[in-house]
Amino acid sequence: MRLHLTVGATRPGTRGRNATIAAFVVLAAMVPAGAVVAADQSVDVSLPYTCTLPSGEVDAAVRVSASLPARVEVGEAIRATDVETSVELSEEAVKKLTEKEGGAVSAATRLTVDVAQGDSTAQALWRGSANPQPVPATGPLTLTTTGDVPTVTGQDDGDLTFTAGALGVDLALTGTTPDSDPAPLTLECTPGKDAAALLATVGVGDDPGGPDGSPTASSTASPSGTPGRDEGTTGDGQDKDAPEVADRPAAEADARPAAPPCKYDDGYPAGPMSLNAYVAGYANVRKQNAAALIPPFCTMLEQGSPEFEPYPDWSGGVIRQHSTGDLYNNGRKESMPFKATFLTFRFMPAEATMVLEQAGPLTVDSLGATDFVFTSTDTYIRVPLVLRVIKLEVDGTPLNVGPTCRTSGSLKSPEPDSAKFPGDHLVLHGRGEQNSGEPATGYQLLSGGPLTGEVTIPAFRGCSNAGENLDRLFTAAVSGSGNYIKQMQGQTCYAVAEVPNPDECTEDRQPLKVPVPER
Image 1 (cartoon, helix red, strand yellow):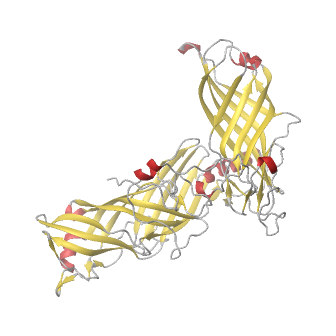
Image 2 (cartoon, rainbow, N blue to C red):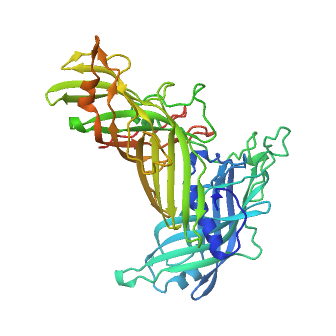
């Protein structure tokens, strides 16, 4: 069984339901942030909750604020942004939390959000955390948490609703002295009986109110109950108080390292999930006991949909994702030219200018495993690459090598699955790990990171100077096995976002992050 990142039917049984929720959280991390439609409605809902303490029940005022799109296309990912959850506990409740005055409290919240579209339902967990703050001697205590939340995708036309459900509040209390820390507490809270817990409604697909299917100014009601038009909106139907995307600061633009163009155009049009990213690194030439610096070059990627396959007992599952891509240099599928200086045969200095030419499909296959707390992902990038020499200087003297000087075939890496991936090609491997609620480490397709591999450089052919065959010279000096490669991929830019993410893209939709090569 495979579960796509969509609003799916609710499964019977607590364990299956909880695993489905966790699958939403895990898979959401694999969807590009830029793919989430820009927010154009603001959520600000205050709700009465009842929380259970060891000493009894207490009332709490809970406020949830966020930004969400008003309408998306079928299949577009939706993520609530700028999410805040505030929990106000009365003075009476604070006294029940700790009998001693003073100290501080840290909080983490877990808000269950019910997502529904027609007869399909699912649940998402909106997590948040807050820094420690003093416990007041008198008066109420307000705890405000923030955090990222998983995406949800509607697969059919029709409104998709977000409704607040149960809330868990984990409290870590500290006393005035190290030995006076009260025990941690968890408050289990439920909405009041008559609470209107609807947070937001997001239209999915064509808007029946518009003559051409486009959203109308009055089609979306504010979740707080106020009309979504007139004083609260602009003429195009968007909430005038919705946060605007700030322009990238000039200082940040000036700080961006020089890099070749990396932009989709008429010659290389973007697809629905198109990403672009820079890659840079080093490649060893073992025979020369040296490394060649490969400066930043552009890659175009088309991200595939992640799929989740649960274990039979729903204790975790496997995540698979297949994507494709190309090297890109001004319309050609190749790297930027790069130079390498060697002492040929250990005494003759030689500087070669080379490019890596793509000779077949570039694929990106990720395989992850998760227990819904810890997730590890192994990504393999495979691409056949031919090494071409375009210029050579020996001891400072130019040596014409002809227009066809290149390896006789693709660079070849050890292939962990040769039956499925036959033929010669480069294989780069990246591993990423992530604990729930913490930033990922290592390599992820979207955020980038280190990719490593080992290649055999084939014999050269087509190299000649004034009729003299230089193939054997290049082969003897460069070709061979055991050549280590380390490449750094930068943060991807979601190139077709309606509003490019200023933390990931330049204004003209090129990757903002240019990676620094590492050995």
